[in-house]
Amino acid sequence: MIERSHDDRGILLISLDFELHWGVHDTLEADDYRENLLGVRRAVPALLDLFGEYGIHATWATVGFLFFERRDDLIRGLPDEKPSYTDGRLSPYSLVQTLGRDEGEDPLHYAGSLIEVIRSHPHQEIGSHTFSHYYCLEEGQTGESFRADLRAAMAAARGRGITLESFVFPKNQLNPNYVGICREMGIKALRGNAPGWMYRPKASLAGKVARLLDAHANLSGHNCYPVSSIERTPPFNMPASQFLRPHSRRLRVFERLKLRRIRSDLTYAARKKQVYHLWWHPHNFGSHIAQNLAFLRRILNHYAYLRDRFRMRSLNMGELSRLLATPEAEAASAPEGKR
Image (cartoon, one colour):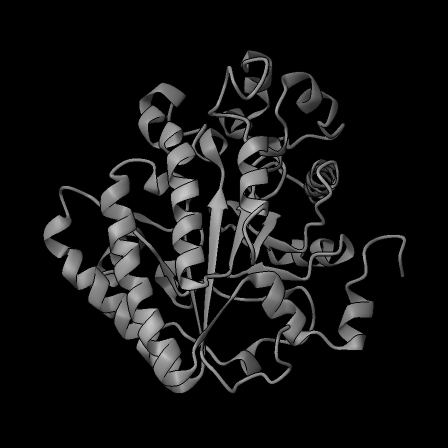
């Protein structure tokens, strides 16, 4: 039961972009990233165990393709209208006919069994990361193809008895023109981007370098915010605060700085009774699993201290959206055909 008060306690919000190969298909061949992608099969249960140990509530924003366990079922679930990117390499649909027959044969492109594992753990929300890892700011795509994509994602989820209410734009390409479509489709919450030039979608090289530096030293501020600052019109925009960068041999000398940065942000959120939104991809933990889990445990140890001292709490995006909802907001966000 979620308390109805808003700014009485700090909140740790966690969202994960669950993609497997669909999230990197246009930049990496499956075999080139195979260790990370296969490692998700071990990382997800380990993350769930760790979340359970610390009472962590999380949103798993899942690519719609992953809801299927067999190629024939996936093909039947494809939307009639597909994205028409000017750069054809961005579309994943050319891969569909090359997929293995099922999840057992092709664990890099299906995840029905993993979704069921996630669902079996308390306080874990399955959200949407679009159907096809749809890029909302790329040249050639349209609002109608986005609508068809999101509708296909919702149908795939319904096939498993899941209603999608939280949404994350792939590659953080938040398109303001599509927020209304999300509302029409019944989305209650979305993850926005942290403020500042370095966190704009499709960042330049300078922006990417600045984000890397910001992960280790406080360049952009704590990027926390009070619940009262979230506009009360659904879908409620819950901006990201920080990306949890995975273990890197090249950057391991800076691990202490990265940990100090996140701990400092969490402490600020707890003291100021604000939201801290941490996110990453499960495949980020697919290699160096032990090191990544150990680092996350150190973060969650600090969260546990703040929970005990300042009553900080953990919520997923769906839970926070229900905290924010009013009868008027619920009516405005009712899905198509239910208003």
